[in-house]
Image (cartoon, rainbow, N blue to C red):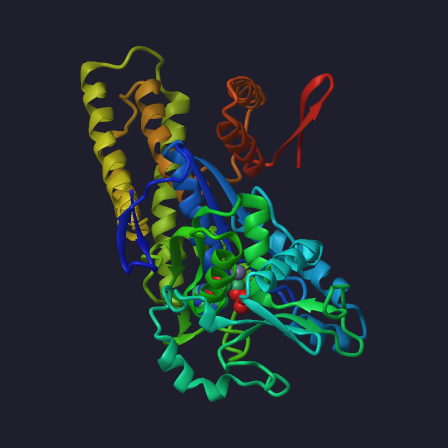
Length: 468
Ligand code: AMP
Ligand code: ZN
């Protein structure tokens, strides 16, 4: 598998730190509003990356934070006459709803910045002890010049940055040793949430949050760190400076960044006001369409949002769903029996499209080409599947289509009535997977059932299920 690494600016073979495992951290949203579909792009893209790793047999530890303390959250709380904690709690809940509706698999862990302050204070203390940080009147700054590799991710030269650096001096920060030094800890202002620290009662800077949460839940070294390309500088550059200086080792092996979702060729953003929330889009389209639209482009390319492109995505998705429905109908009426020689050839041919899909995904998660392979499979299914085929053959075709669309997070049998026997069979399969400690498969089965509206409950008497 090849991944484009922002660090080296080229595609590199993926070699995990630990065989069969992927440790992955994705910077999550700042929660002060409903998320917009630009924020949804990294969610959908990196969920698909995770799903593909799992398809390839990797055990993925996927951590993604919520930034729940920030100027924007505090501002919103003041406007509403409530607390920052109330605002962030509300929008985390809303964000989780949107993520579920976009069929984003739950992360292994979603740490909240406000619950990890202790660890951040420890990390800042280490940085001060090692000479990488200094305190001035209750504020702690990172001493950027001390970190020799500063600029290695964004490929920026420190001196160039420095010459344009006057602009980086924010009012009240003129006590910094150098303009490029950034804040690790800041003292509280009246009415702001604050925590105790050796330097002042205050709160952490944004960058230190991710360095600490990544370390706590994934370890000092991780395989992949990801986010939108606007995070390369300064956020990820600063995370590297903090983590590598504090831990004394390389932080992340691969840095992945998605391109922007644009509208009229400008980045969709809250500050420009040119955004649609996921919630708004869900009123017009099934969110599967949004997911399919996002994956129709390579994740590193800019993607322009338009009603025409959404309609094209809707039509494309419809073709896949119709083929799947047709297959299920035919299989429901088909005769059971051994595969004929001709049918074995048919399934082998279908496998060629599966290989095509894998080749595309192995090449830096080229979902655009992977979707093209799915369309080829659909075309092949439409020309070969008919009432003369055996149930085994039709099920075989359906299984291949299901597997590929599942990697993309597209559910092809949404809204279909699931039979009790099918549920029982899947529960049995899940129990067997758990016995073999194949928890990824067990989770996948649970999620698949959930997507069909079936909720599992592990009780003392065994597994029980109910309809949502
Ligand atoms: P924020 O809440 O602004 O910190 O953003 C959360 C995530 O969404 C980050 O990974 C951003 O890079 C990403 N993001 C924000 N706007 C866009 C956009 N228009 N296109 C793609 N990614 C975006
Ligand atoms: Zn981050």
